[in-house]
Length: 130
Image 1 (cartoon, rainbow, N blue to C red):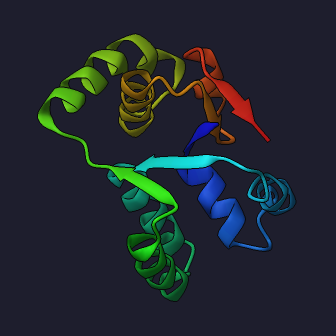
Image 2 (cartoon, rainbow, N blue to C red):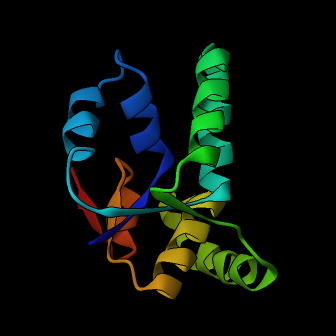
């Protein structure tokens, strides 16, 4: 099974005091192929930095760049255009442009499931795993 990983899952997994830590830790034990985007990686590092966890952000960024278990999709101009089109559709419900880029990637790769705590993925037709 292939699963898209969103920044909320990474934050929960990396921050033991996060309200979703236990859920993320259990979910991470499953057997799945992980896919994320360079935008989600940037967002995760930025959110960690904003929480005063700069060293955690640096360590995680170094680790995810080296690991082969997670496929990181870099958003090209075609995907970006699709994401902006999806933002027109889903932005009014609260999905942000990075969410919409995730939706575009998931559609392109036919990924139906995501590790996320963001309800906008469900609204856009994807299954949220926890």
